[in-house]
Length: 145
Image (cartoon, rainbow, N blue to C red; front, side):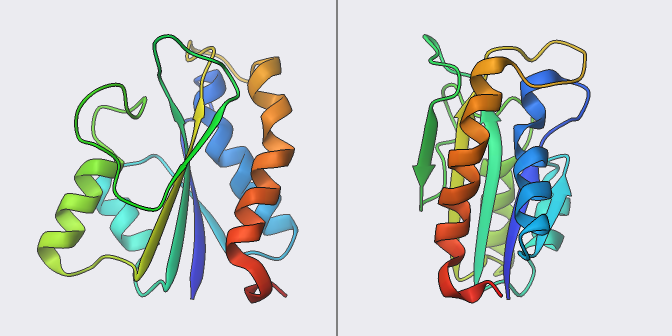
């Protein structure tokens, strides 16, 4: 099984980018779920996955809003990472300790412009979504119907 996990909050503007990507992937036939990024929830979302693709917003200084970063390894547990207090690095550490990592983990992070309360992506991040969806679908490759 392969899964795309869109991480974020629908009420913190660009933090919702992962949720938007998950919806688009599901509309194109991919298995996608939405998550608030809480570590135990991520473990459940990628349980038994051969490939888990996580999409989340990231805070960078200086930022280039809409820039997409990809890593096939666990993200660092220090520095400007997720926009969440606990999240992907902690989930990876927990899953590793419990022997519950997916066979392959790919993380896409999109540099955010606006994480304030509200709905709707900034223009820069919204423009990045179609290319990001294509990249995520490329990760899934021929595995999609």
